[in-house]
Image (cartoon, rainbow, N blue to C red):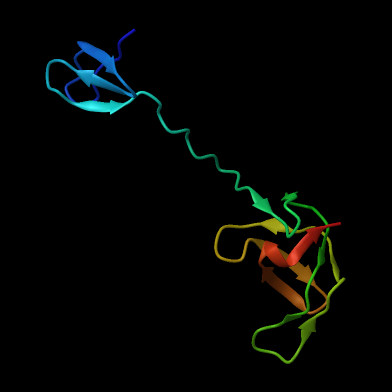
Amino acid sequence: MSNACPQCTLENTYPDGENYVCADCGFEWPMVVAEEESDVRIVKDANGNVLQDGDTVVVVKDLKVKGTSSTLKVGTKIKGIRIVDGDHEVDCRTDLGQMMLKACFLKKA
């Protein structure tokens, strides 16, 4: 089975190891096309459990809140998290207000 060359679009191609090769223009490309990235981001908690939007989590370490003298204490339960892109994967509402937290400091409840 041959595929059309992505460079010259001719169908005179053949497999060679892990690549396809075009006999007409000499272009090579991998047989296995990388899977398309999905819109869903996989975020895991401190124990390796997958977190999803709406989950309830528990803080596993005292966290100082940047810009204040407050601390988010270990054992604090947070309901209805949202998974977001960026350095801090979890967006949530706590007693101290709206926060973005890293998943490595949380565990699924």
